[in-house]
Image 1 (cartoon, rainbow, N blue to C red):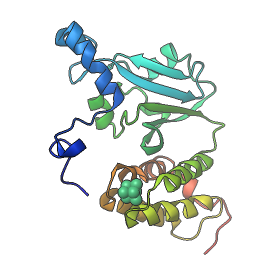
Image 2 (image 1 turned 90 degrees about the vertical axis):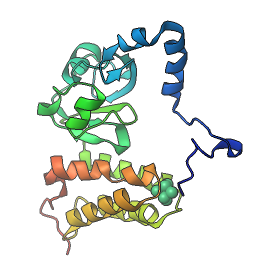
Image 3 (image 1 turned 90 degrees about the horizontal axis):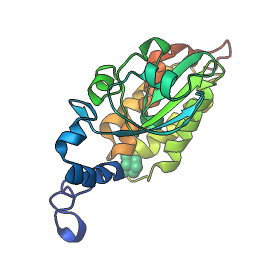
Image 4 (image 1 turned 180 degrees about the vertical axis):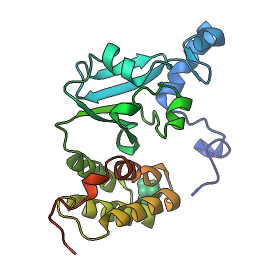
Length: 224
Ligand code: SF4
């Protein structure tokens, strides 16, 4: 439970800086080369190099260090070897991220532009899917990941990730009101969980409901 936060009461009861590795790696560069050099990479508001991990249907998947500011389309086409096949969706931010549709990839890769587009760098994962991808299967896998990772300390996440998987497992033949159930579970986890895992466990599913509503329709197989 927070507070206290690590910045006031952390390791050994002392103020503690808790940052991710990417941030800590930037510190010596800024000290050695100066803030102006760091700010010269990227754009104002999203200064400095950014690590992203690209997977899926692109010519050259991998980890890239980019200067924020280029568009996602330019990045995929010119840096990652292009999309293989016809683009279906890009999942920005990985398991806890949101989907961008093919007509949304002209967004600039900056914190501000992605936020304005309802998206995020998140973990830095960029997952690219072409028309052959089975998004229902993807959502099932994401759901199972969060169910497995939930530590069980708080009920919204412990039970929410379980209920979410149960519904995702039957997407091929959904029960009546399953889409509303997923939104209800997703919002409850987002609003009421204790930590970031629960806060984000339903984000990709809720994004899929918005961007791919047909995934949650019955396909003719329907159980009440
Ligand atoms: S939200 Fe965090 S604390 Fe709560 S069960 Fe999930 S992982 Fe545990």
